[in-house]
Image 1 (cartoon, rainbow, N blue to C red):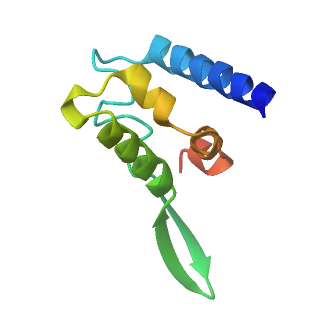
Image 2: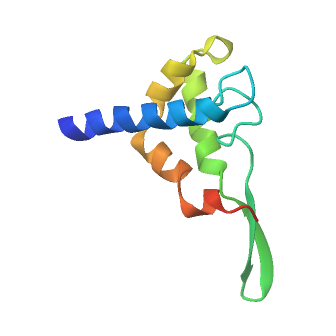
Length: 102
């Protein structure tokens, strides 16, 4: 588990650096309301002939909100928020459903 913990820290830091490099706003990408981590991503699919919509970003948004809460809401430091997010967050954040544009 020790090695996995090091891998997780390296992975989340690379994600943060990469996203931050192209993020157009002054506010950190995790704390901005237009962040891909907190915006709803609606997908529609047919279930037994009926169209159903779901927000595939619900879990990531919930995780970010919980991390911000643990870090003191308005006083949340981006580095601390990132440290509060689990390896599962980064896995969910990068699933195929998050990559689709429609």
